[in-house]
Image 1 (spheres, helix red, strand yellow):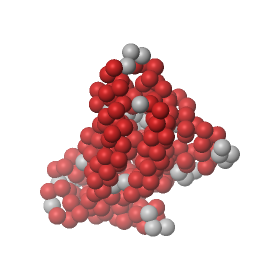
Image 2 (cartoon, one colour; image 1 turned 90 degrees about the horizontal axis):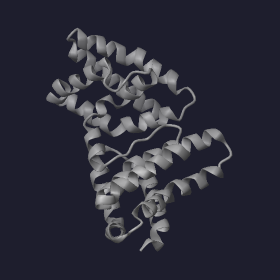
Image 3 (cartoon, helix red, strand yellow; image 1 turned 30 degrees about the horizontal axis):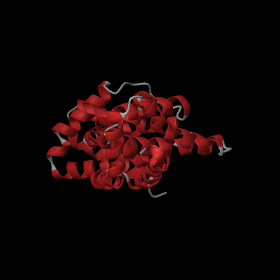
Image 4 (spheres, one colour; image 1 turned 180 degrees about the horizontal axis):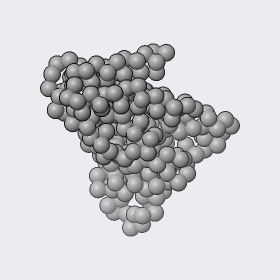
Length: 253
């Protein structure tokens, strides 16, 4: 049963690298389902075999090591540090969007054990940025929070926590104001589709921290002050300008 595991899991990852290039809210559900169905029989067999396996922990560790070992081998062939770092960002994204969620969804009761071990090996050997386990549900729930996707990245670069005042204020503004009116919903929808790519491209740059600091100064701080002053329409204009400017610079440039 496990004889084809290496080839199958490597193909799973390589397919995820392709899918992540078009990752956004509109296509994630259908892409995830197609991706899962392609490997469904393999996952069913893994789950059934593990139920009967006496040495479950050893088999889980062996399965979990396939993708990290494969990526480690690829990275060792890359001489340039910056190129390796950029590849790792792509690999991280593929792993948390289309690999871990599919394993958690597909391997039933043992999915979490395998995915948690992958995360442990990945964080120890591949990525300097700590990744967390992910499920289909956490990804789709995350889309509901994406108005703060860039804001979250900015706050992280400034050492602010996920529940910081600024993020909570902007999330409340999104949920209590923007989504309630048509023009605001259009901004949110546009943001859903481009924010992950913008953050990904900024993170690849040497001056990422400086870029996030400028976003904070030029867009987020004025918008937060406008919300505090109940100038919600004015804040919408600032946020809309930010989406447009960042899209122009990091999507179409």
